[in-house]
Image (cartoon, rainbow, N blue to C red; front, side, top):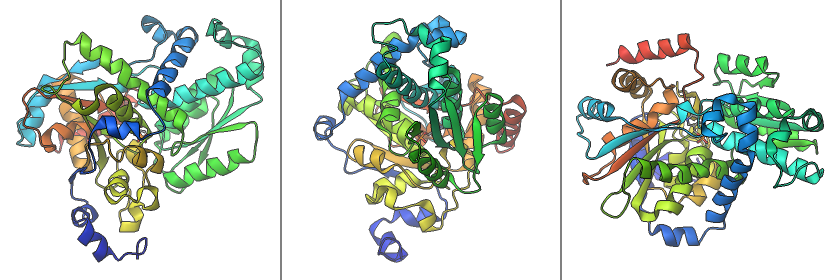
Length: 433
Ligand SMILES: *Cc1c(COP(=O)(O)O)cnc(C)c1O
């Protein structure tokens, strides 16, 4: 029995489950999606929260430019390019025998400064907010100050009595670890067994405490939550429930709006925007989708993309049971090369919030992730990690009959992958083409 129903009963109610338990790729379209305006009006979170996060990141920009010189060119704003990918579009159409109507772009979060993944949005933002809250409380900082002063010794000393803790499959740990260590916080990252060895080594080299768990992601998060809860000077970054993380991710939508304008891309009733977002626990892609629905309303269609072995958000949203169900409940093994997406239980906070806003969820096999990893390198010269490819399957599998559709595949990570590791990924993919 799973939540009081037999597997047969679950399958009768949700026939896609039959394919899902056999690890077959599926596309689920959300029939609860309706007017974005009406859906957003019913939520307690909204545009003001996103704009507040954007304003906070602007206050921190002089500090970021100072401590991470690679962000100087962009004045301390950590943002990724939006890049046209016409050759990848053609290659996808050929490979999957599904010619794609409209243009394909890549939103290259793999190139985000500081930590090379989508986690540089939410993770860094939450650490900055924590630092600001503490510094305000101590009377050491106010909004009008030049935040560059946060790099001074007195701030580092002050923050060193506080800790930041989180659970991570890898990339969240990198972004929280790097940012926290830079500010002077004590930082501990609980890593699941899916986390790559090089990610753990990189963090340890930066002075981050890495605790390894033989369990999966949810257990690593739970352990971090318990340990941090016992210490009032400790802040737990809750990947499953944090609104702060979520708003940090949502700022991406404001930035994307400006980039679309720079590319002369119209988004309106006759020019829809389809955005495909690799999904693990849901906070990153969910935050971005939330921001996009606020800005583009019914003209944007957002899809989560998950590995066939870890379709936790699909299970949660399709059934409406959210975090009450895990992939393991249905015998799914949660084993995937897409370490950033290897999550067995989704964020209930994100699934519920977006229940009427997401256009759908689809799943991708690891083999296809590797194939596309090789394809995007051959066609566009872009180096990604396996998780970051899930979005590219969207244009090939999601029904679209509008030739004016702009497709954006969100490429969520890759820049920090060591060359030798990436080369292995690439060989694997090439051999599958
Ligand atoms: C974390 C991560 C995601 C998904 O973000 P969630 O907030 O876990 O849904 C996607 N891609 C990569 C590379 C990631 O590290």
